[in-house]
Image 1 (cartoon, helix red, strand yellow):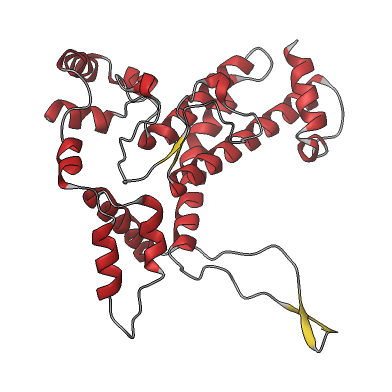
Image 2 (cartoon, helix red, strand yellow):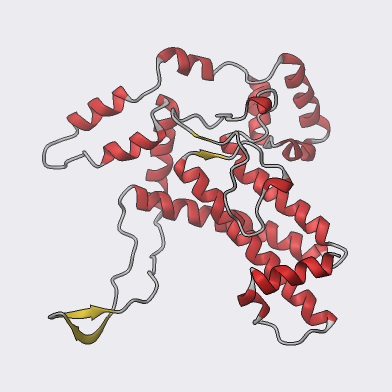
Length: 282
């Protein structure tokens, strides 16, 4: 059954991958399946990066609720984050664990890819598929996240298009080759990180924070923009509530125990080791 499903995916959704390897022998088929898996990893990493850039929370990121073609599918409890809160939970049934909270989405998607790797193991060797996730997911995610955030902040990242020299309507026609992006500098990454930190500390509205940046004028000063930013910050009561423990004491004790004895199990619960250490410290 599994080979038939993989062949169907290649024929209908990954035709470009199917054409990269010629032949239908067992070795050629496994190569095709490996290439298809690598494409799924890249597309999944880019998808969740876009979610994080626009404040989208899926809500129920079970393995069976993700698309093999990296499509965003509505399963009901999704939400767009308003006041920026990395621990935002949109699905009330997830309140006790926060497994699918906003900041956990990248790690959950990565975990789900490992589960896909395990499911394909009878047909595709798990070692190269899991190694590909380990070596590439974070890098692809980071590149897409910072590229998109830099565009949202108005940084000019596209290389100048070339001209083909042909005339059209009185001007030279621009070559319609795909856009090329330059690398994002470390200072630009720090700028993005600092802006996100400021949004988190003030609980400012995720969407309006970017929108109001368009009102910043170097010539006229920042007064109007600052006034608008203050207006979209979260109320003090809401900010104080963010510092309260998200889990009941009994669950924090369990997290502490896992942190001391079996820390590698924490990502399975959607909890990063760093986050677990913060919970215990609080």
